[in-house]
Image (cartoon, rainbow, N blue to C red):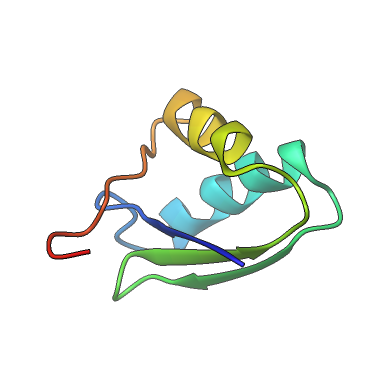
Length: 68
């Protein structure tokens, strides 16, 4: 499972385009969003790099959480 921290995903309206971007990489991925924590978990067999790139292109770049 991949996990992404997306600091500017602050509401449900933000979570929707994040989810759509991730599904554009893997339409079969299982995606869980936690808006208050600004976290997204993705169950997929694909490489993390493709997801990081599409998140950045969508305007929701992944940033490692401090201390991780």
